[in-house]
Image (cartoon, rainbow, N blue to C red; front, side, top):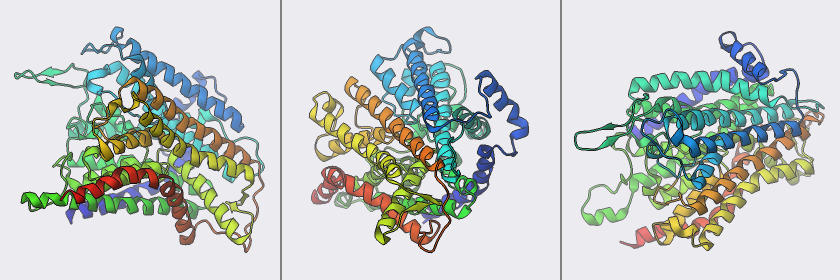
Length: 560
């Protein structure tokens, strides 16, 4: 019972803190005076001046998209180069060697796309310089990119016959300076106080010869959670006592995973001048989260019925979980990190029961719109909202509208791309790996569970998550190159149609609501939105899930 109470407290705190944060971010992106404009305004002006950016010059969607792609491609090049040359660079007290080309490519793509998929052990592969200047910086910039794209879509929804959707460089700078940077500093200081390591000292060797890795971890952990990045400083991520040492650190880090995505829903309501819209989207996300959280917790609590045959009193599945966190908090983290495009873990998902591991996997396969990544989750959910009003329009024979904007075939084509591309890359990637001998190289387990591991890996990369069933060895050239391409496609082949959607909507007139207009702030619409997300995701992946976790669950019960 205490675990369920902790989950309830978590959700209450999440919603409570999201309200002021959401309103604060609305002021930031509207360019209004806010809490930090006086103390950090100079930093925004300095950054824009150094970059040669005219803050008053807005961009149409095509220029906005080119700015996004060019900037993030530069990030890929920088992170790749740092890994390849880290053996010759500074801040490398443990003498880490250069990273192989295929792994460096995969990691560079991973961190530029906000995926933070890691096929390597951080403490045994990356120098402090690479962790800080490469991976840490990308944690900020990839998250800020998602927030900027979201803000451009919101502007498109609220604009009246406009040809521009804002300025990417201004939006990204404001997201970094006023949101990600100050909150990361505060969280990092609190985590250090809880015992999270933050040092430039080299690894320590004990009397028994054991090597204990150290490093500037707290600063990266703060932004990895707040930015829904998820890349751990250490190989076992937030299950490591140097990344997540106490119950309070566990609560704060798990809270940070969903905090900004939840608050952005309310930012959306503020920016379109209708708070009910933001609350409706937040309600849909919360309802979907609970639909997956409750059965995941129950699956792990009930565990494996075969345990009773061994004479054990409890069948609960404790394998792969930290006893200091417990089953409920482990399951909560697993669902939160896959609902968001975070990917950090405080327990090993590969050790969950088949059904317990299936629900986090399915959350990714929904497109990571249940809170999702900072910015990317909400713009994905808004695309589903457009699909939902289109479906409702078909039912009653009226032209669909969302926030007064009529939805035309062009908007539906762009929305379809956003929804279908992640599904396609997951299924195609999984099939390609299964049909290739090199693709099956990392599969350590046979049968249904081995297939589940592979499917989870490509569901994670294809939806920019980053978590994994750790029994699957993905750090081989085939998965590194294919996974890197898939992560790029699933990030930027979605961003471009989202920006095209924003540009198209911005040019439209705002039609006044009539008697036949579908209200998009009511419980009915929340149910319709949830149903749309579930229908698309579940129907797409039921066949492939039946080959993995469903079969494995049947086998687990049949083994008795």
